[in-house]
Length: 559
Ligand code: ISL
Ligand code: CA
Image (tube, helix red, strand yellow):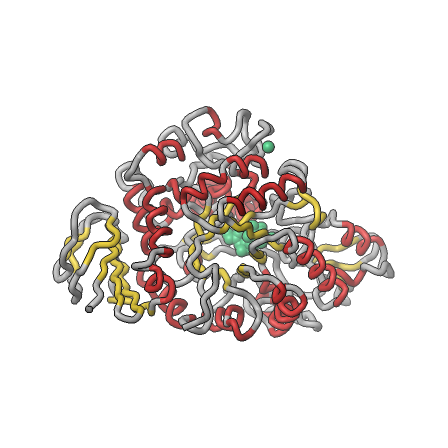
């Protein structure tokens, strides 16, 4: 068994500050607004908050474009507010994890302004500047996540700079030791305030090969990733970061890492390698779409189970998993994997929470997931705020897809589904703000909100509270946190069943992923029912009738 860490049995609650709670009536969520709602998170039971960026930013990508790492964006508050948030959270036993966005900065960061000012500026080499090819074209054929090409031409200095995201998010040059040192100093500045750690934005992209070769793989996402994702340089920089910074603090670090396999997962999270605590992989959120091409695919439970199975088993004792259904970049899980109709919304949301929280790893809950908030219907492209929605829309239209089909894709996958305001109560603007919010609320807020959830003992909120408690419990903590995972019936396309074993303790998780009643047969003697999202008592599983979206956790220990 791996050495115990404080973040092993804790649950992380993610806050997207712009959309959480507006304290001063300007329509934008802010830090005092978060402080006012800390008891919501405490009541839920999460011990860690991951705060999406609150740093000074022109907000081209809502804060993932930072212009000063050591200042708070005025619309979110002040440094004093941030210090107060850390202290107020600590009083409730909650640690704050901040977002470390250091693959790129904003083009308004003073470092980039200097770097751009001339070819011989001392900061020129802090970013990635290259000459055009002989024919005047881009230095190589890499693509960007948010624009067609990863290179932007600067007319005044006649060179291109690299941006894997928007042209307002130039990539830092990690090959330059001065850049790395500046980032490490900045990390000390924040960690000294008593942070619980960092979520590291696209941290697996910081290593760029010195020769900037052309991409040759074009059908698996953003062209170029074979060169800049998960390479040896990235691991070397992370070990240096650990040595210079992280080893001095007892913190949680989670790398956001698209294009990773379980072997990469071991490389990043095996404690002996001194890199990160854990990573977010993207395999399960890539089943139902080709994101880069904005193409929908069918969700397939067999594939989902195979993915989870390989991560669960291959990291067992060799690393650590993070577990998530959603975040600020993903649609709402109940709409995506469950059924968001009035009849089955709560049922299916509880089922999804149950299967996730009973697996091995650190679970993440994205704001509103505990209320089973749903996707919203957008009626026209200009209702979206997100730059990625606009880019994907243009891509689809250019490919000859109808406006209706393009809107259908975005109504399924847009990042804005996660970013509409948090639904607190049935008052105007969902209690999020006293004025028109920056992104319009989902009209279903009178029925789906925190106040309604608190008042209903059978709500998704209390179900999540119970799941979170179980991980910390005397009876089931160890088996849930450290138990061996075993997938049952990999080919069953309707039911996800698995067991977890730790010493004599064994639990069985059974979840119906469909809206139909099904009968299944398992060889196990039920000692006790631990979780059930229906009110029946399950005493045997030799032949068990599963109601639509039913989820069961059963103690099947043999002693
Ligand atoms: O948004 C995505 C999934 O729908 C991804 O393709 C995303 O762009 C990628 O995972 C990187 O995401 C992170 O970095 C981006 C930022 O826009 C995202 O919000 C952030 O999570 C650039 O900083
Ligand atoms: Ca505000």
